[in-house]
Length: 470
Image 1 (cartoon, rainbow, N blue to C red):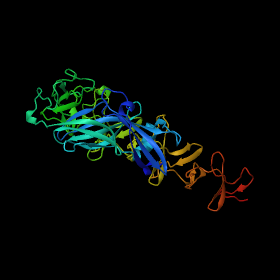
Image 2 (cartoon, rainbow, N blue to C red; image 1 turned 120 degrees about the vertical axis):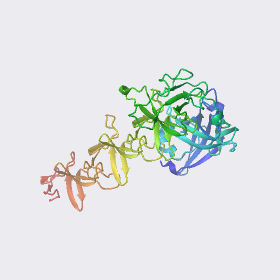
Image 3 (cartoon, helix red, strand yellow; image 1 turned 90 degrees about the vertical axis):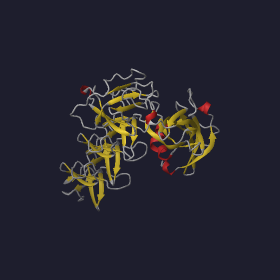
Image 4 (spheres, helix red, strand yellow; image 1 turned 45 degrees about the horizontal axis):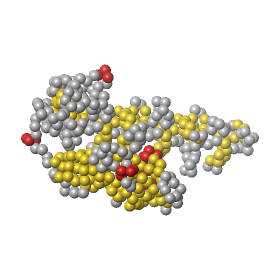
């Protein structure tokens, strides 16, 4: 079903937040809303439940803050005409394939002079309950307090409070000790070198070596050392040995306690937002490149990942090449360890995920192994059986490798014919009698090879070229 063609009508139905939202201590950003999809004259009801663990945030003027929330989608599976809806969780089944193609949530500030909504986006993450995780990105404009309303069409689904504070001038901030960040709270922990795990909090949480550890001469000049600190809200920040706080930029930070035996590097790259907070998870830069920053508290929390990573059940590949694209999420074809993979280039909520099964690139079809036997995602060449049909994928390294072959092909001395018809049979290995170019040929019912200089099972003779003689 092509839901991209769907025309969405929002119903003026705002259900009770207290009754329909999951129970939690703070419930301002929580609620349910029902909307209607009309496709080819057929109506379908959807329900969206929101849930988050905050009802108020604070941000400085000019800075941005992200409020994360979960949106669980349900579809009405009742029979048309029924008095009551019958809700069925449609999160994973419909979100990635259909709903994400056309569904869009919006948010707006009650007072646009105090704050503005930058965007409402899916983070690409899922909860353990397979619920998509979203975020509202809000920028502080001027000091004051306003509410941000999350909308489904013209319905208010939920809201939360934003307080914008005056920007603290650098000269007015407290030093917090030698080399500490002016943005760090007094309750944060600080230290130098090794990146602490997110599990540490309060003073003494960072067990790293002394601050400003000397950087080995063999490391690149752009690598820095300095102090890590954790604020009361749990965010990690970094100030280099020259007293410069990292904000809105990448930083290559030296790790004096790196353990090469466990695969740790002497230094890693980290991204800090405009407020100086180290980010984790997916990060989209201003040039449209996606990066993945380690969300795991393994001693390298926040580092820029390279190579294969798995997120939400999907595999992604991040460039390991130091060619200006290191860490970029790869899309399209990628050759890894001698094998070809195809990473989705489509912005459908799963951009960059490793694809399996049949894919079309340009006017060519390819088959990517769906098997979980160590070959998943590999581009297949040679014969492959899919269902009860056999196909042949070109093994030639002549620019056609992996192409699904159609028409005549000679393999190991035998001739085969793969259907060229675009009638649902394209690429199928034919068997039995087949008229090709006005001539009848017979192909073995099991192996598919063309018979020649032989008597067919039904008693007809085919010549040296395989054509029916009589």
